[in-house]
Amino acid sequence: MAQQRSKVRPKPKAQPKSEYDSPWKDVLEIYFEDFITFFFPFVHSEIDWTKEIEFLNKELKQVTKDAKVGRRYADTLVKVYRINGEETWLYLHIEIQSRSERNFALRMFIYNTRISERYGRSVESFAVLADNDINWRPNRFVSPALWTKTEFEFPIVKLLDYRTRWSELEADRNPFATVVMVHLRTLETANDRRARKVYKLALIKRLYEQGFSREDIINLYNLIDWVMTLTKDLEREFQEELSKYEEEKKMPYITSIERAGQLKGQLEGEQKLVIKLLNRRIGEIKPPVVEQISKLPVEQLEELAEALLDFSTVANLEQWLNSREKPVES
Image (cartoon, rainbow, N blue to C red; front, side, top):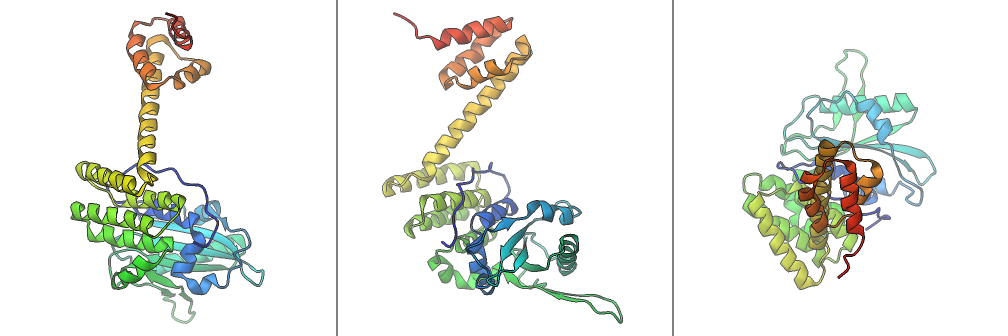
């Protein structure tokens, strides 16, 4: 894979519906050069990849803050340098929603113009269309004025076109080949979660079989798991099958992290609940005492949850905590 990897991103919470925008943004930032290589190779050859890439999220937010609520897309504004040394801003739009939009090209034109005018920079605009309408391919805006004509064209990629190139995707080690496969399988199994479970496991196994690094497997697993949602029963089956597969491969990259994350989440949840109950029972607890509670192992935290019903003052709590710090002598 082409560029320096960032640290493994924490896994986001699972959602009942298949979500696309958040994971797209994550993988786009982690694997930006791979994104350009995969979707817009003619751009890749013009960029000086030895120079720092900067994501301009704050700048983009200033010009897209009036976007319609509830729309599904992932936008990114990136500062790069061309091989001739010129600074260039790339506006990348990933359209996620499942229906066509009449004024999409106009919106692309408006955002391009706003960015250019606000920051005094030329802007290159690109779009990845991840919707499920094969005929919707907006790539050009022409103003409706009678005598003064404004024309704006931008390159697009249609993910549905990759359905006929599945063997190419399977053989390609670019992370975005995996991203496209995940997206297409998710659309395909919208009404068949059992088939989705089979595809989900197959896509993850492919990462191991193609020799992806541990970090890449974890990053791409986070996207796969976030997008390809399952029912609780199917998720349990999936985790069992994945755990068995990792044991056979002697590479417990995912299931060990999954278990550790679940245990950590449970512990943090219990800590918050106990602290909340203590605040209601004996008054607000000071930060040093909260820190003591946060260091308790699970067993002692459960003991505290039962013991706090007998506390009437903060002194009772402190006495209980202090007694746990010293070993019991026989």
